[in-house]
Length: 214
Image (cartoon, rainbow, N blue to C red):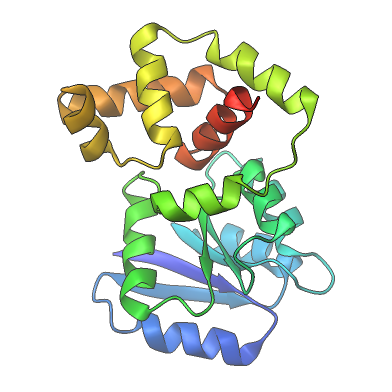
């Protein structure tokens, strides 16, 4: 059973999400919170596996809350909720360690699948969404330089896997493209997280994008 918490300042949004997620037999909502400050308390008290996190909230916003949750030893997966498909706050949240993002009008089936996907350790961003996000990243020299240093740490095979992850490929798609077994791909991704100092696959994709910017 996947334990989930909802963090949003709008009680109607929280109620709607609770209603939508009730259709999933393997997901249970253990807590709700109205802002980022309450999110930390919810995580400490209820230990959710996944937090659906709104970004724009009073007091402590979702970005700050996501950064704080990343510092915890036992941290939940964070899926950012937003009404904007290219919101700078969302991009910053992904860099802070969020597992991805969903628009608030995401169909129920996709919302449920996204929760399952991040718990399984895979990326919940589709290739099209990944491309849409990275096109709006700030093009700064420090980011490019640091990302290139990180990629230089990789072996040739690790770099191939990183590039595939950067295109939004799932583990199965990487395995098929590079003719590797699924366990081997998972092992490579685990090493990439360590070598690139990344929290999840989304951050790997962002590092790859930064490194390859011209």
